[in-house]
Length: 135
Image (cartoon, rainbow, N blue to C red):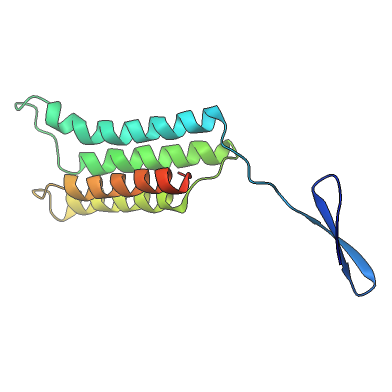
């Protein structure tokens, strides 16, 4: 038997005992949380655009884009977690993968441009954030 209670709790009868189960309503994101998510997306795009606007005489290592993309994602995830906001699993996976790509590029294949995998990760994270409303 389930009986609704005014303060969003339900009373569930199990054998001869009563158990209180709390139903947590789905909460909308705050403006601050949305602002941080958009800022991290902007940071990802900035990391990807920066190498294309740098003058030709300034040579950047191929591992910098994946490193800074991972840094943006992990820092955003840590900040959101410290604020007690939900952080999507895709943020942690993409940030860690991006760091892995940077290490691979630095140690194994320094001549290989790793911008395309980072673009795929950024599209993945931003796409998940838009469609699932969680980043």
